[in-house]
Length: 111
Image (cartoon, rainbow, N blue to C red; front, top):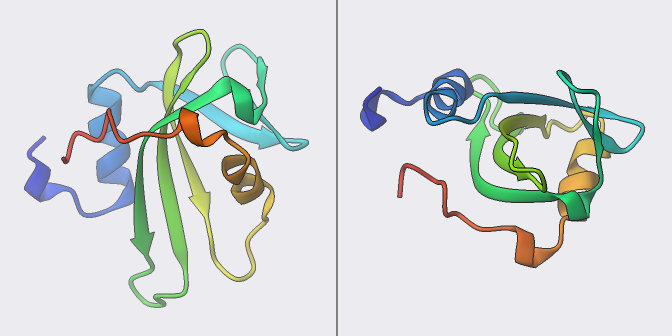
């Protein structure tokens, strides 16, 4: 996939999947949970290796952030967080709690 064709969250997720970020996660009770293994993760267990911000097409206040992450065991995947005014804040709170030393852009394939 060529970088210039990346327009939507879906395009970025596909690109990261092609680079090995294939694990899926969801928020459950303020923890990030692997949908495959059901293993629970806290902010200190996660490394953010890239993030991309998106504005809504019809409403710029509808925002989302795609995180490319790696767990302490080396599982790589993506998490898409919605940041609209009416969205649930638990995902935002989780990612804000990740220690600063665990956040980089080393896997941002668009750099």
